[in-house]
Amino acid sequence: MAHISEVKFRRVLKCFCEDIPATSTANLSAINRNTVQRIYSLLRDRIVDIAIEESKPFVGDIEVDESYFGPRRVRGKRGRGASGKIPVLGLHKRQGRVFLSVVKNCSKAELMPILQGRIVEGSDVYTDGWKAYDGLVTNGYQHHRVHHHENEFARGKNHVNGIESFWSYAKFRMAKLRGVRKEKFLIHLKESEWRFNHRSDNIYSILLTQTRHFPL
Image (cartoon, rainbow, N blue to C red; front, side, top):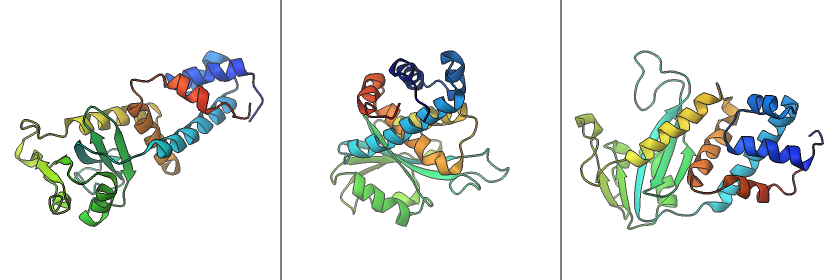
């Protein structure tokens, strides 16, 4: 990476924390665009590491849902298994954090091992009516459903509004990037996860501490 001063690095870091695109940051800071993009890439790689370090099992009231990321849907291809899209499983502890995992598909065989590895037994798990979630009770969870196919979106505590709100947030962020290469998708997804999990924190201070040994 081209050598830049600490002052310029902090200027770029502030723009990154404010979710300003790299090209706009280059224009605002008068720093070479390639240099800004390299710094952004290093920051995102570090965020993935931090997210892994911070990861821990979920316990309590947990919402579970899947979503699809990628190009606009092909006409006639809707719902789970939509062509050309990347399936992502999401867990959301109510009033808390999220965890995301890219999956091959949304089958029970694919989803259940992740849920068992990430949610403490005895927790209350809230899902929609997707058949892949059958068996959560026998695996030690209190399972509550909301049936979207019956136009039911909430019944008391039975809803997945929290994780669905996160999907909207993450997809809005992705859209601002105007296209993410498939090989970089997981990094950007984990960035959205980390930003959401630290939505009440000063992420500039966190990243400034975490990047003290960056090559400037």
